[in-house]
Amino acid sequence: MKGIGAIRRIDNLGRIAVPKELRRNLCIGTGEPLEIFVDREKVVFKKYSPVLEMKNIALKFVHILHEILSGNVFITDRDQVVASSDPGQIGKKIDCIDNNIIKALDGEDILESRRAISPIRADGYILGAVGLQKDNLDLTAFKIIKVTASIIGKQLE
Image: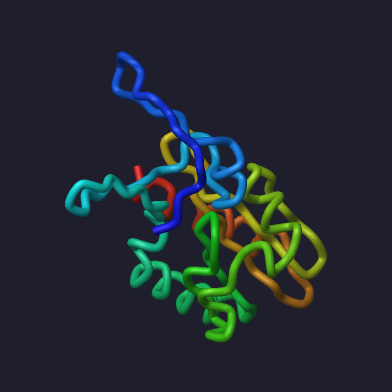
C-alpha cells in the first residue's frame, strides 16, 4: 500500500473526510458507495459497483436488447463497460470511450442520430448508464433504452 501523506481525524460522528485530490484521482463522487474492509490493523476502502455486481443480469439484458434492436447495446457502471453486445468493449474504462457517456453519468439522456444513452438511477444516485449505437436510431429504440435503465435502477434500490 502507498501512503499519500494526508492525515485526517475522525469527527464525533465517526466520519473521516477523504482528501479531494484522492477522490478526484480515483473518480470517487459524492454519494458513491465504498466497501470497507479490515486487513489486520488496516482499514481499506474500495469503490463498490452495484451494476458490476449484477453483471450476469446485465449481460442477459444486453443480449436480449441486441436481438430486438439490432445495434451495439452496452451497460456501464461509473468506471467501465460492464456488459456489451461487442465483447471487445467489456471492461473498457469510461474515460477512454467518449464524452456522451460522461454526460449520461452526470444525469443527461443522450439522443443522437446513431446513439442513445440513458443514466441508471437508484436511490437518487446515478450508478451507470445503458446505451445503444445503431444506424437509423428511432424514438422507440431510445424509449426502450430509457426503460431498461429504469428497470436496472429499480433492481438496484
